[in-house]
Each structure stands twice: as C-alpha cells, then as structure tokens.
Amino acid sequence: MEPQMLLRAPNVFPSGEVLQNALGDTVYAVLSSFLNTITNEEYALTLEWRFYNDGKAWLGKVLHKKKTILWLSIWEGSFKTSFFFTEKHLESIAALDIADSIKDDFAKAKPTGRLIAMILDVSSQEQIDDLLKVVRFKKSLK
Image (cartoon, rainbow, N blue to C red; front, side, top):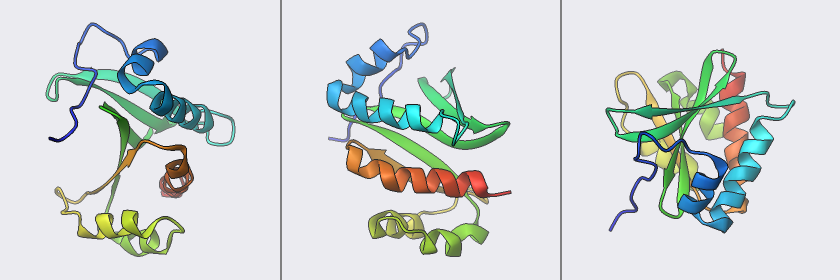
C-alpha cells in the first residue's frame, strides 16, 4: 500500500510540533536540517505553507524572491520535494553530480504540459546532499 499524504486538516497549521508528530523524530530531524540549510544566508530561500483545497492538504512552497524553487509535501515516513523543469534543462540535469537513480527517474518522467517533474522522496540524511545540489541548480536558472 502506498504511503498516505499527511497534513490534511485545513485548520491545523504545519508547525514544528505538527511536522514532528507526522514524520516521527528521525525524518523530522532530516526535514528540519534541510529547512535550516535552505533558509540560511547562503541559500536565502523562504518557505510558505498553504492549504490547497484541490489536493486537500498543506503544501510548502519554497521560494527565492518570487521564483518557486520547489514544493514540499509531507508523507508517512518521508517528505517529498517536487521540482519542475522544462525540456531545455534535461542535459544539464543529466550532467549534475547526483544519484543516477534520480536522473533515471527524471528522464522517464512524463511532461505535464511543458513541465517535467522531478520528485525526490526523502527519508534519510544521506539524501540531503543530492537534494541540495538540485536546489542550487534550480536556483541558478533564469
């Protein structure tokens, strides 16, 4: 059975305590470390939580100024980050120093309109290095 997306109560804001209860201590520590890194001076990203009625769940939108870098969703045992790229970025992504499994999944992804989604399912600290490389790449795009 596929894990369930969490944070479905519109009146329960995803505070640190809510996130920790949803993810458990281990995965919450990974999420917390990731969020602390991307909101520091080096990355200068901001996280906005919003409840979306179409998906009936809270999603985090991570921005650099007004540009959306990634979307964050909370699942049983993990959090997912979703990046959206266009076809012109395929070669650059293939050249990134990230796990081949990420590149393979992305290469197989079907476009939605003009955008191709790269979804990373994160549950351990070891995955953060690749995740940050994708964040830096996305942030560098015009």
